[in-house]
Length: 189
Image (tube, rainbow, N blue to C red; front, side, top):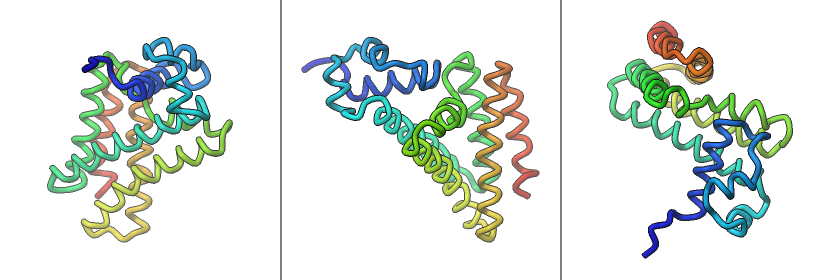
């Protein structure tokens, strides 16, 4: 049995890391192939439409990872406020533990950079934000918020943690995320 990782997963892992660290436009397919130790044919076998299809896969993976983390916190907390505070504090902890290199705001690395060049990527990015907002919205509605209030609050919560993460990485300081966590109870009261 081979100990070599699955080429598809290696390609997606590498592309995600490179898209996060240097941006979509600055990341070339040859670099992804080289850094993933995958044969060129593997990239085109798994992603016949090339870089855009690979980016879509990375977008969908990122969406599910964050949505799953949100669900985890909601399932393991008594209320929305505690769950979101723990989720955002976890982001701060991850940022510090990775020396501010392991987490990047989704809006920064892909949504802004790609949404103007590809309708398909823009729609996928919209879907990511909607998915995350939907997770928060449903929990707020379970706790008694009406649909419009839950929708509005969910949108602001996602904007808050994405913006705080951007500041945390820019300053290389966890305080913006910790401030966001402290203000969640005020926002959701």
